[in-house]
Length: 97
Image (cartoon, rainbow, N blue to C red; front, side, top):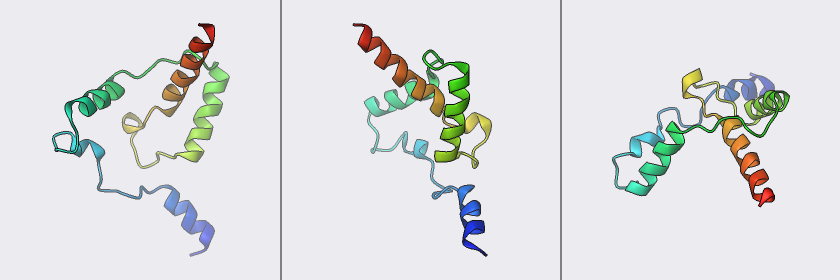
């Protein structure tokens, strides 16, 4: 197998296929504060408020290249663009103060 073929194959695989961080939910590794933060992040996905529709498409394409989520179903994917959008929106809000 050539190195380019190997890198393409590796791109579609997770490094830790049997690991799920949410399995720590009931473990002593997570306290109540950690569980609350994670629960909020999973349930309260921020809306798009900062980027334009064109910028969202560009950021989504860039995010997919940098952090591919090909090993996840659509519902399992981390909404990277929405969280990036929140950062930009909050920065803009702070400048207005």
